[in-house]
Length: 597
Image (cartoon, rainbow, N blue to C red; front, side):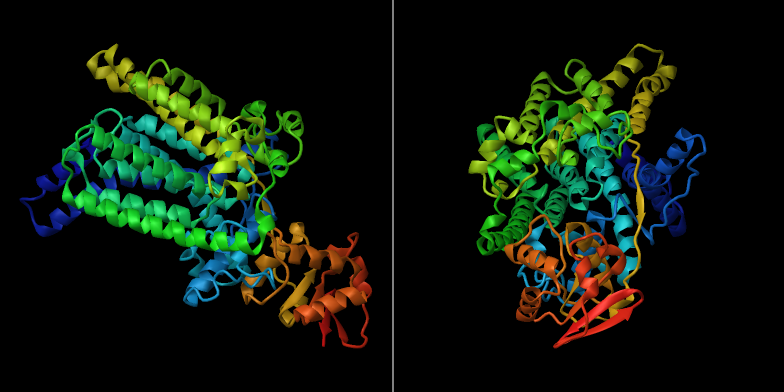
């Protein structure tokens, strides 16, 4: 039994002889003082400070007041930029819209018309669908997104904290681990990728499964610590994590399968010691639910692979997004190291945000110390080091020797183009190594001082390490204001297309569509179907006969031309479209609405 559990029981027992209100009050006090309550609340408050409040004031301090601190309005701005965040805000809203209607038409979204199963063109974020039920329209979509953006950092912190606490690290080490995982500099290269930032369920699921099976790195398997309920909860959290998408969920599925195989093998080698029946039932039920969730989602993505064979990536295309060894020392522009490393980022070439893999200089230092001074055994440290090296080699993509094996022989990896995202796994290994070092460092500090000073000594040597990890993890995030739906788009008859249409703008059109979810041609995702590519190309010549014929074949009834956005683009000629046979022109709010008979 852990110290936090003992504290709760002592508080409850002390009030057991009193009145019933006193007992309830004692239980409430115990709950509020419980380690996991404090960790959950603390992770959320820290995430608000680190991602939403502190960056503005840090920028104000650095500029000497030239840029006065003005905190972004979460209902009118999007954290990161106006590209991918707008598309992902639409995605969460669509998931909620589909859930409100019994998941009818979930995969055939209102965008990407006439493509089928377009939700599977990227990670679906289905696990956030319940949150998508709250509110309606553009403002609600942005507010939901920003709340989730902050909470993803909180959950990653909490997941890292609970994992190493279960493995045997102390509280400060758990806090260092949570901070190192949640605020690793490389994560700021994905500020527009909520699906990549949402990795907290991975470590949380592993922590719950380890706790449910009574296992830790310091004590091994303890039958008296088995908690079947926690094991079941771990499977449910793992299923939820997979429901967010396979971008980081695919490696998680395979690693969880390997972990299960290793556990079964160890159980057989040790002579098959008896296991609690409730644990066996919980594992079977939870494992089946996880498998069913994974396979049902994988079936949809396999269907998309069959519909669109070119969704599979070519090896040469993967090379465009593959990092190089020095990427491990380069941070994104949105991190603390952004400005000093501008030249280093430029040297990485195209798609540099997928190649900036700095896990944190402090994390590197702490993990290195953990190889020599740690509460983990030598074998465990070597295992973590091996995992780090293998993870880094895989993250190098075409510049490493191992990713090609995944690409060729492990199903699903041939649909990915961004191997650098596998840096998540070396980061976890490094963070666990660091936790072992910080815990051991605290033990040494307590052992060499007088008993009355032992706690203070441990804090003196470990808390500054936490502060430095947090300082290195302060981001430099932009908050982009998004306008509301244009009047011309609101007046259009679906299905329609909004010009311009390209990856840079379509995410905004998708966000605007959250008001009514009308059927529209616009849409942007990690995959562009041949149909959508052809429509975009022919619309460059709109209102040519070829473009009009194509729109009529598709059944498109309206074309919205946004004046301030098409100027200077190939779509500018659309402004000159006039009323003619089968075309009615209206000017609304400076924009043009063309209705097609």
